[in-house]
Length: 162
View 1 (cartoon, rainbow, N blue to C red):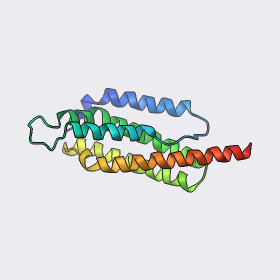
View 2: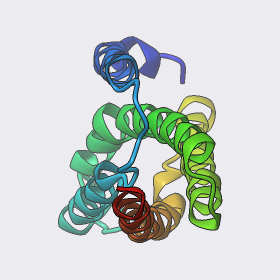
View 3: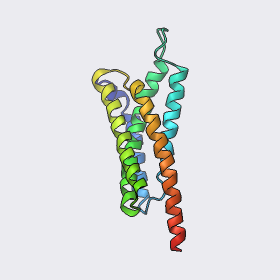
View 4: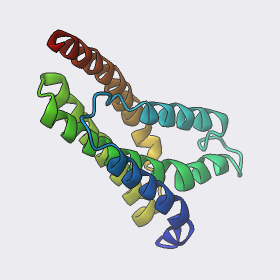
């Protein structure tokens, strides 16, 4: 149960340091908040799930998927979710619109899904990702599309000011 914490700290620490470095390096107004990382992570996770489906009857089925979820997906989604919440809150402060509110709400959903997946792994040793993967995919697609629309709106606003 808790022994998973002994195996994942290196990747989690590296991703957390990366998130903190990103936050400290980007002090200006965030204009691009489309979160392509979450979309790519969801696509790669779905591909790994399809390649090594844990629902097959093979005794070793899903081993690659479980390893990918424990060591890559869960720490990366927690770090990306934290960064997404920070960026969306900062963006909402500078560019107040309905898209910004939707992006912030969706960033919170992505982080909540990440925490639920982490709790599934830590407390029950079950793969909550199989239940949450469609939600991750839908939320990351929404985040990407609405983020692109918001980026275009901010560009038009900046061009109108000049």
